[in-house]
Image (cartoon, rainbow, N blue to C red; front, side, top):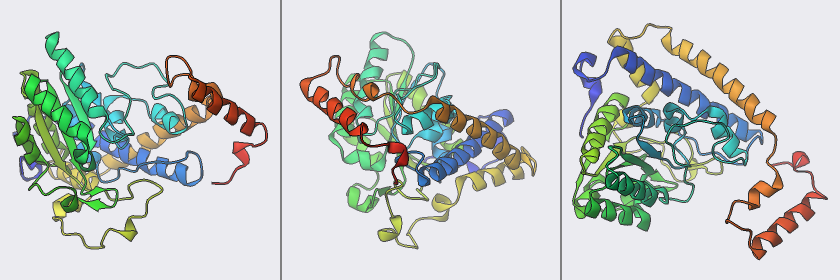
Length: 348
């Protein structure tokens, strides 16, 4: 384990009390977003959703470590990280409703989230190499799950970063399950962090349910990356819910998993208790954060609903620079189907 902050006094950590409270506020906000998004999907408001409950500490801690001009390359389960980075909640909801990735005007150096597994990793490395060539002083962070480490994109990206000293932090959030596949069947390596050795740079593990441990670890990793030393951070966390809303974890996950209590404990409760014990928050702080988050997500839902459904052309016009005959055929079929079907009246 690289760091476990919870065992230390807050004043021994390189973070102010205001920043420590901001991290908790973002974690509570992310938790409420996740719960609300899951409820919206269950009533047919959007077709599918990947919950991240239990991973808020890992994502928010890493997001707070990023400098303003660093770039985040996220995947589909990174909503907590994107929210903490400044992406409006309405944008994330609109994406799930079929809209373009970023609906509002904002400038937060966040790449569009990747749904194909690991495809964002080479993008992060390519951007990092460009940052190195231009001597911009920036770094990129590629966020991915443990399942992505079985993809070729992961190994190719790591290899390029090691060879070209790209300023990249590979942030692997190991929640112990790649859909239904447990980590021990994902790799024979002692850890995911150990995989960095093959590519000529360091790999570290961190308690992913301790946001301040993640914050310090990723802050150090980004500093090293800016000096031309990439690094792989394995954030050990736990997926409390299903892989997606179409998944049933009860079919494959045992009731009692052989994992330590720190890894399966709720990160929001754990961190709130820690800050309360440190005298940084009072008893009503978390409830106030939930109330503020509820108002924000209510507004985000209203914004997403007011935008309505995307036009049919939006599904086809941006696949290629110019539509191909096959894309034209698909567009014509959908337009014909919509003439006799009303999606609003369909049951899901």
